Structure formats: C-alpha cells, structure tokens
Length: 173
Image 1 (cartoon, rainbow, N blue to C red):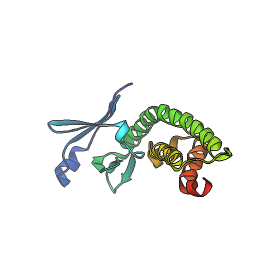
Image 2: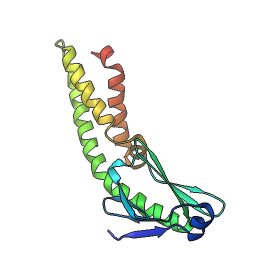
Image 3: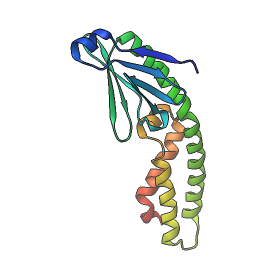
Image 4: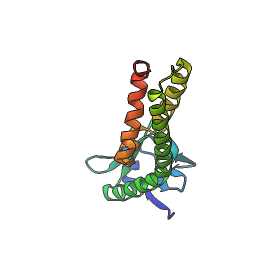
C-alpha cells in the first residue's frame, strides 16, 4: 500500500491553537502524529466511515470508534477529500474479508435455524438459547454503519433474518 500523508495548515495552528498534525494512511490503519507522539488507530477499531466536516476556511476529519470519536482539525478541503477517499478504500479492503466470513456464517446459521424450527420433536430451551447467543454474536460482529455501507443486499438480508430470529425465537420455538 502506498503511504498517503497530509498535514494540517500552519496558519490554523497559529491562529486557533490547533496542534500541528500529520495524518498518514498506514497499512494497519490511520496514523496520527501530533508533535512528538505517533498513534495508529487500527481499521478494526473504526466503527463508521470517516467524515469530513467543512468549515469556513479549513475542514476537519472525524473518525469514530465504538468508544470514542476523534476530530482532527485544520486541513485543506481538497487534501482532506482525497485522503478520506483513500482511507475509505483501505477501510473497505479491511472490512470485506470480515464481511464475507460473516455472510458465510450467517448462511450456515440460517440453515441451522430452519432445521431447528422445522423439527417435529420438542426442542429444549438450552438449544434455543445457544442459537440465539450465536446469532447475537454474529449480528454485533461488524458495526452497523460499516455493514450498511460495504455489505451486499444478500448479506444484509441474512443478518436481518438472524436479528428477527433473535427477537421472536421463544414464540417460534
């Protein structure tokens, strides 16, 4: 992967007291350099697509994780737009294999649920709970914004059917 780097504007640092920042697209995620420290925000911690927040003269990059949102200030709009596109492409490359594995597991779970519900014999509560637990884990594996943006319609349909099963499992059992 080619490295892509942008720096915030020195004038914003001077006028508004923003720390000098360098954003670098790293193979593992977004690398942020603020003066002496370098931090990498890995792709697997990002819970949504990075957003550009336009301001009058400069723009900011907003990146969200499950626990916190980060805001990097004072970049030119054109640089930030290019950087954001490259970051989104890299994030997509990271998320796609995860989504494919998730879809494969969702199809398998749907088959197990169908055989569980179609069985003529009595099914124990513990069997139902085990299926519900596996469905919940799979539904929460990838964040909703990333799934909605990168997943196929078949994948979204499979996840929706698992969520429906979780919601109505006791009634169907």
